[in-house]
Image (cartoon, rainbow over all chains, first blue to last red):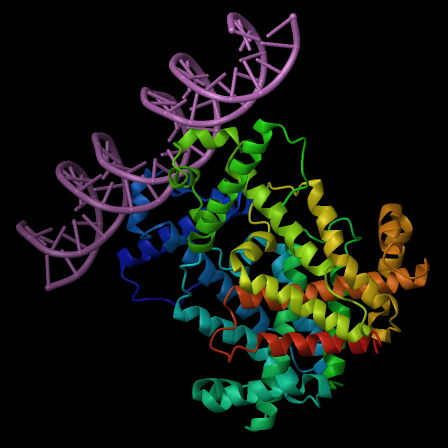
Length: 235
Length: 235
DNA sequence: CGCAACAGTTATAGTCTCTAACACAAGCGA
DNA sequence: TCGCTTGTGTTAGAGACTATAACTGTTGCG
């Protein structure tokens, strides 16, 4: 899950224990939710006693934060692994289905990412990085688009964002065939719109809010994706 | 917030105390999040001591449930109060902006509705009622639509849902000018798609995930709404 | 080989939910 | 008006959990 660190015999054991703790935490998360995650229960499951866990995670929130970071990284990896060589529209469908599949196969992890339950919480800088990694493929897909009028205002805003924020411009440029400010705006607009739509549909599905409606999440997502592809003139 | 119940002198006081508790709970929710909501702190704030609250709410979850129900009812009320007499497209924009405004002015309440953090949680039957009430206006707006091909599969699914589920069919019919099965499918598809899109954008905004992007939530929502209106041929 | 850093322990403070047992007050009928 | 039932509140306390403190044993590095 992490790149190999200075692998001294001790830090290796440490990393392994950290992973075991995370595994146990994910198991608890899966059947008790975030509120049911208790350090003391994890410790018992691992055969250690209570406070020992604090050697590995500074607090319960720290552990949760690590899980969130992992989940972000994981979904970003899944999305960047998607094969984009087909038509942009096909690629977009693939991305959407990958995102959804990741979420429905491990809903507890998706719920972990989904919102920020705690007001005081501030995402670690890594999160921004992973969010960008996850959004990257969408940029590539939309870069070739010829957008229709309704998305014009969004493109304008996104373009001005890229103009103001150099790192963002560089990030976007890295996913475009040619560094073009107009294309950057289009790509950003498409990516953010796609992300919002995906999040909406998937989050409602994962939260079980579609139950009793004929399990239409996949159909819904396909339709939405097509609409977006149409709006950006993806062929 | 509730209709006047059998207003005996005692049950009146009871209802008032329940409301005060809810108010205090909402206050705590606003600055500590759901995890920071503690019955004992609420009690202290109201000058009572701990366990007294259990006369009014069976448990912490019961209180949270009441808050969720209230929030659902509130947003449903806001949406049903929207003036739909203009063009369908204008009405849709109004609905979207009403939904968003409700969410951003009281994010803590929106976050309460948004997801189901606890796996074991089952929504009370009232919730379904309120969800339908909230979705009703969208049905009306989309009833007149002439949908484009991409939404076809969604319409087909929704139509078959209405055919299988008589209460749903009745509910939908109540928001249509004429009871027509094709129109019902279209209306349901539009409403569910709109709901998903709205939820996606608003939830990302409320969770602060758009920060640093030039505060584009309103523009984003407008564009999405227009795309959906186009897809359904709303004039 | 010795010691510093680390992994783990028990004890304990403090917070929180929720139950139990009890005290008091208010409203209702006779 | 009296008395009883019902409801409202109290304190005491069990049990779960987070987190810190103080301490013990172990490991591996210089």
